[in-house]
Amino acid sequence: MDTLDNLTHFFIGCNLLNQLENVLYLKRFKKLVHIYMKGNLFSNEDDYQFFIVAFFPNLTVLDNKLILQELKEKASSKYQDDIEKRNQEESQKQLAEEVLQKQEAELNLHKEAFVEYLDGPHLFKSMFDEDTFSSDRRSVPGIEDLLQSFENQMVGLCKQLFDRGLAEREQRERELKSFSSSQDEVETHYKNQAIQVLEDFNRQHKERIKKLEQLTLRNSVSEELSRGYDEINKLSERLMTLEFKLISKLEENIRNVETCISDKVTDFIEIAQETFTECRNLEDDFHHKVQEIIDATLENVAKGSQVENLPHDVKMLFTDKIKVMHALNTNHKLHLLTLNDREQKLLTSVSSWKIAFFKDVHDKVTQQNRTRISDIHRYADFLRKQLERFH
Image (cartoon, rainbow, N blue to C red; front, side):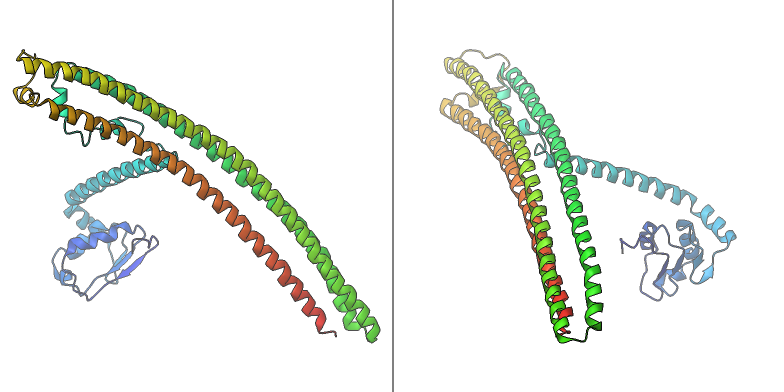
């Protein structure tokens, strides 16, 4: 029912509805003017009419009875507080839905640019989702500053790639819009030529049919039929020639835009690869610096030296050097794996989009070409059958 935007009359009488609140579902139908609910369980309640009239101010008829102004005023007064409360709730709900729709629209746009979730710290934070050593490591003096510096630099790189992705998407959209317009112009041009050819032929063909209907001598009929068949063959040739020129021009346009888009995709892929290489370099640098601090901390703990601001539980962890170094190296590999996965996702998405898009373009042109050729043959056969009756 949700799609019935023009619903004006709703009849659901003599059913087993017993919750008056459920009727409020119908408020979404803004053009509703007549409701019939008599015979339901709630229709015997004292407030039934007041409730319906109050919450459906646009109604003019309830249970086949005209709603008087006096009833509307009493209903509105009785449920004024409830109506205001519900309107406020609906406004808040609508606002929340609009915010959600806006967020979804932005995310879809980012996905079309292949840079979703690269406009903030999402990728950086996802690197540490499975980092079991992260909280303990941060307790070690000096590491928190390194981590913050690492995050700032990586988020900056991701934002640059994000902005470039959106810019590339806008350029692609302009190129593809221009391409689509060019294809339409070419098709219109050759369609108009084909129409002119058909109009000229049909005019002559009608005259030939009239002439054949008037001829009585068999030799004259045979000669006119022969000329008619020749003209049909010539018509087919002219239309096929136009079709060949059309498909050649369309394919030329496709090759041109495919080259342009391929170059842009290649440039964007190279930029993305450079960005992720820089991110991996940042991770390597961060890992090595953290490793130096961890080594020094392990050495101090082993010597029994006092490590400033190091919690007791973390200090106990640092008594097991093998475990600490294993955790450090494992998490380093996880961080690099997260970067590699996101890079591969971006590269695969870009390449897959390009392949799928131009496959659809080629398939559409090919299918339309086959359809037009089939139409030419079928029309020629139709014309020939018109002449066959004169044999």
